[in-house]
Image (cartoon, rainbow, N blue to C red; front, side):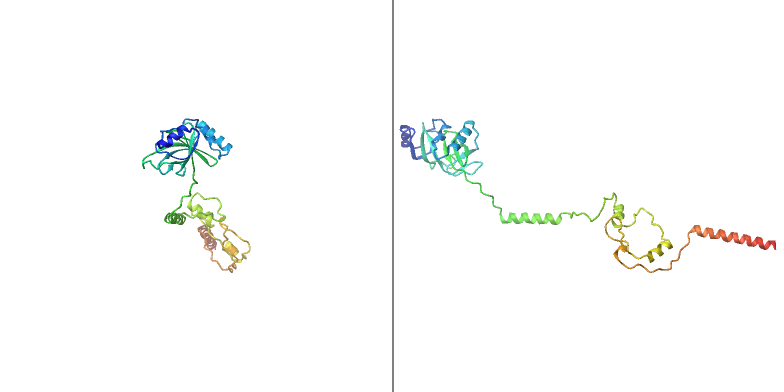
Length: 266
């Protein structure tokens, strides 16, 4: 502050000055009660002043701001202007300038905010003041960044494995062979398929395909349930099994023995 302003403040303690220069913090510190000084701000509602005083008494401040020549920096965004600063025993300056500060001059202050009203208490001189907290601005996303995010999202969608549940898949098989056997309605690879007989083939060829049959638990119909016409009866040549050949040979041998005995008796 200038010498004239300092003299005026010393003479007229408790008065209000329109403008002061806060060029030398700490030269004329506030000598009164820091908490009670909030009551000098009559434009702040009484309920809000009570909240601010309670927090200041408990030192529950919102932020520790760094005061510079052209800005007030903290966790929140604040306007650069400082107003209604307390000096000396109780004088107030409505407008406070810092034009004589250098670019490297810095002071710290505690910030208390309630209901949109913020109080600044510089730690070097305790000059209770008022500042304005600005609304936080949303961070704009650069077009290139947005395109990169969209491209990454599409690439992740294209490379992600397809996940779906097969219709009527039933319980999961323990091995690929069992999965193929159970899911496709085909016999297991570890089982020996039974040989068709003449009676079964004849029945298959003569029975109309009217009863739906599902295969293997997959829910997909087999050829019998698709409505296709039944195969016409066909003559099937049955190949005798080894046991049948043995029985036939034994029978011929018995017949030959009896015929030889019959000839010898004559």
